[in-house]
Image 1 (tube, rainbow, N blue to C red):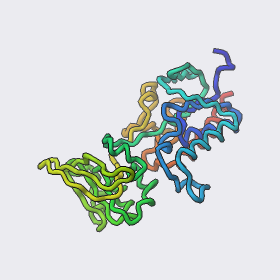
Image 2: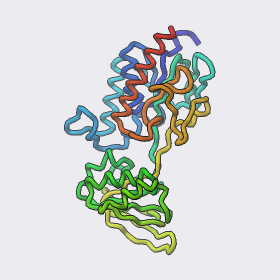
Image 3: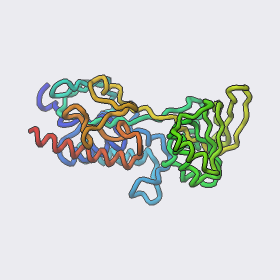
Image 4: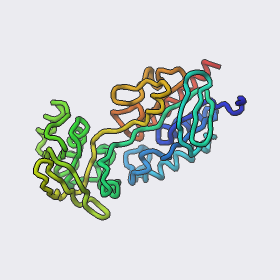
Length: 310
């Protein structure tokens, strides 16, 4: 492969982190390649109204925001390919990235593949995603003022989401499929002490009711098999996230105990020349704006790295 086909940086992922990295790298004249993946735009493509991204007074649709970011990165020369990464070789320079369509060489890589929320895998749940079903209380809680809600889950995330939602909701019921909670004692007590939060344990959500909006949940008691209907207007699923990091772990990138890419110094990974940004390394904030900020940081770190190694 000639130097003409050797990229300064390849950005893997096209959510807020990847596209912001592309924007900064392109403006630095690094001529980045963005490999957008099977789901270009990331999780915001499944979001209707985004009201907490700075600069949009009246909010903006998730797909529209990502389309704007894509066009902005492209305006400055970022090359964007709708391909899916199948393997990465970080064993020597230049790095090799193989997709379902081609093979590329690059001096640096920014991993920005994000993380997918885990769902209950109910057809009715998927039908009503964005219409009363969500996996992010801090993103969507504002839209549920005065509503009765359910949070599915039994860990710290479920307790945290439920507690946050009480700022807006009339009531929040935590439904957990086991008799005991996995949450830490302090997080569980905080939820138990909140008068707006109720608990249903040893029960499974088997159907989300409603045609165009959530109107209730059908729940089955795991011990008796009895089914009941909860008349609620929203379901927040808090059963964890799965970061898209498997391919990179196979290539030698260090992964932390929760399955996320481990950060060594700002946006650097354990392999020199490989950087990371966004939800694939962030299990705490998981916001579009924080992912975009990390994308900016990664691009600046790449620019500095390349200048030092020229």
